[in-house]
Length: 422
Image (cartoon, rainbow, N blue to C red; front, side):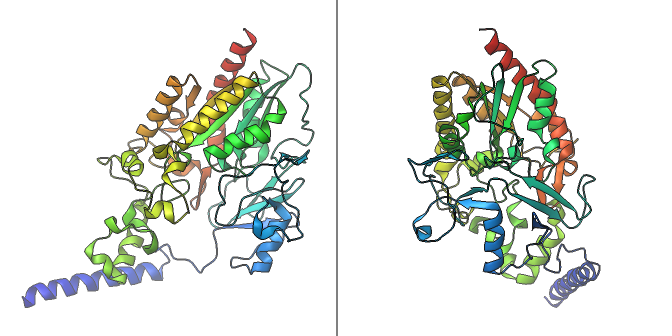
């Protein structure tokens, strides 16, 4: 008994010594509290890492416009129009299906801000490690001379989606909507690819509302809806899914807790020491089905004030796609779907854990007669680390934008050619 106790004591002492060494050399993943990603206003005032409410308000009022909510009724700030009202830059006012934790907002017309990164730098970042996001008079990350009225002879492709369509973390001229337009113009010189991504919408049903009340005003010939896997599956990261045991304490669901997690030291050491493999999911597990089967009250939903109904498991994206297809049928245009993979498990000799979700979407689109393109084959063999804007920001970088542009352009060209040949 004494010998076993001695072995355990020596084992724990060794772990503690290893942990102390890693801390000493800064290899535990801990930081001094500074955020890896931070923001600057158009005049390059930096939002502090721990902003006061006044500083947060200063930044948000410079870059965002909130949807009207009861608590803002008597607040003298500009808001999006109430239902039934109309302004040129926003369109008919409409109700969002839900509030996020801070209230739904859209980008302020003619505003700009900078996303900035500490740590590893992309070659296209500016001297401060930043990328500018500028929004035109419609509150969209698109050309300044964009008009509501479609010029004679012009074909329009309106792109809907979230931050992957907005092209978060990359320069606008290197975003996939711009790169696709450049390719299309070799065959169709008057085509316009309009970026409606991330303009107040974050879920599939919000894309449908944006099409009906906002972006449909641009008279599209093709509506290109981009679905990232986090539009379809609830995950424990916005653009990824970590192994549950690698999560921070508050995010580990009860069923994933081991007996030794009652020790703060062991739990923290385990998470930090294995953090580098947090994206490596067990290929023997059906991660898609596990996520589809999570109950409504699971931590992954409740921590973000979400429900199964917003995701594929509850039918929300499927109904949104049907609604958008119906709108397109009424307005003489075609709905098309693009599926982005999560940027994890990609690269040679790696297992991508979400192939099943791609198959479910493609099968649904085939049944509903919606043209669809899957970008997984384009990116599957590319190491995911090389596609990220930053290790702390797994949005697709400019390399990823360039890789997906050719298949996207070919897909859209096929749909435009089919329409013009009717």
